[in-house]
Amino acid sequence: MTPRVTLLAGGVGGAKLAEGLAAVCSPERLSIIGNVADDQEFHGLWVSPDIDTLTYSLANLIDRRQGWGLADESHRVLAGLERLGCDTWMSLGDRDMATHIFRTQLRHQGVRPSAIAQRIAESLGVDIDLLLPTDDPLQTTVKTEQGWLAFQEYFVRERCRPEVLEVRFEGAATARPTSEALAAIETAEVLLIAPSNPVVSIAPILAVPGIRRAIETSRATRVAVSPLIGGRTVKGPADRMLTAMGYPCSNLGVAESYAGLLDGLVIDASDRDDRTALEAEGVTVLTTDTLMTDAEEKARLAGETLAFAGALRREEVEA
Image 1 (cartoon, one colour):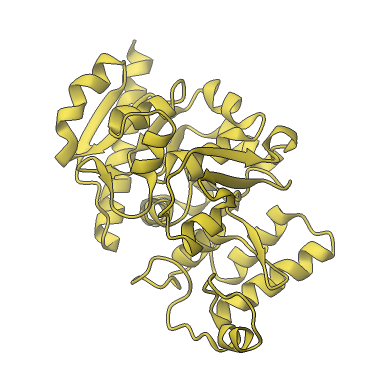
Image 2 (cartoon, rainbow, N blue to C red):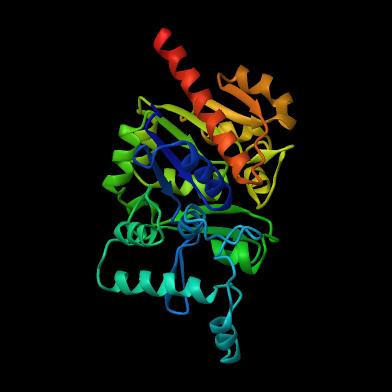
């Protein structure tokens, strides 16, 4: 039987591994905790980019070319807003707008964000538990030479060009973890961290009081999949952000960012030279091809990662 799996995930990279796991796990044995610290209001609507990317990917509605948004999308509403003089650097498609309108309406009615995320997922045919780490406000902000920017301003409007001087998670100190996220961690037999940005996709989840501690004390086998291939990210600024936060831009830096949370790390075959340094730090390593460009590769990597976790678990039992 497939173990009970809980995945911590950000956007594009996290969604790919989530799809792979969905292909090899029974829906009732898979839970995904997504990042909400990228959320921001646009045109009066509450947008949740990472949660929507996970949802659209699992529903097979994602725009595969760009990795986010809905496939076969139009942008008439955005064009109309631009004609009216609105700032439209955040690309929101017409059908995507429907998701944000629905989410905002329910938020105004006082419905929990966790319940909203699950309702949207279920309405699109997703039968996996898609969980939020917190229902409280949480936002990643990035300090640059221009000052502090909301993450979407840095990532989308500025296209990751400014040098990152500091990252903080506003609201983290007072945020409360959702009972669903804590339960998913506590009941997991395998805890996975997706190949998402460790600094701005996974760290905000871990910053919610109680989440990191629950993972540290979990009896589950804990494995991360590195977002680096050949010492760099396929997409996004994770490599530069690791350096900015004082970590080596390598798989050793990824492991250091997850100190105390890992039993094993999956790295790409092109980074096999990192293995010796990682194992010297007590991290067991699986080396394989981690690039996921199609459904077969996603399922293969998910299966290999679960087999790796299973082997680690058997070693722990025998020890």
